[in-house]
Length: 171
Image 1 (cartoon, rainbow, N blue to C red):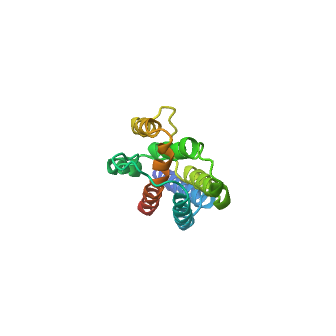
Image 2 (spheres, one colour):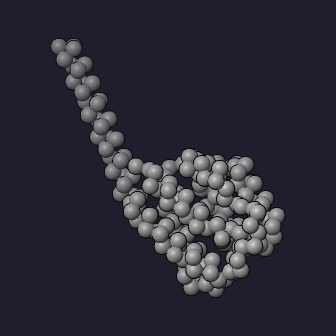
Image 3 (cartoon, rainbow, N blue to C red):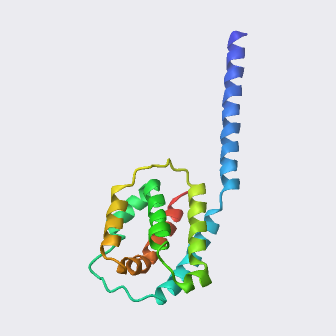
């Protein structure tokens, strides 16, 4: 009888665990945009970024890059770096950008919306400390003066392709 009671309580525990796990999983998918929706938002930003790039002077600094190939590996693996990089573009790049075309095509609003959706969908422990890679990017960005904005905008397609690759890599 004692064995029967132990088995039943174990079975109850396992059943409850599965029910809780299923509830948490369904909550995640209900409260988060689908991967398809997020990918479509990135595709829309690609088009708007091309439009935006066409309205600014061409990036004349060819020997400096903000978003390097080795940085992509960090982006793909580290959600804190992803958030800090998106914040850098929102605050440092777009915060200094005062082009009428940005308002007309709603680029900054759409990028902010994507940033919020990604932050909401991908749980990531927040970090008050800025990562070294972000500090390096900011140092380079501010080191080249006003041309830093043009450099960052010219590399938007790189950032957007990283975001798209990341979305494709998650299950």
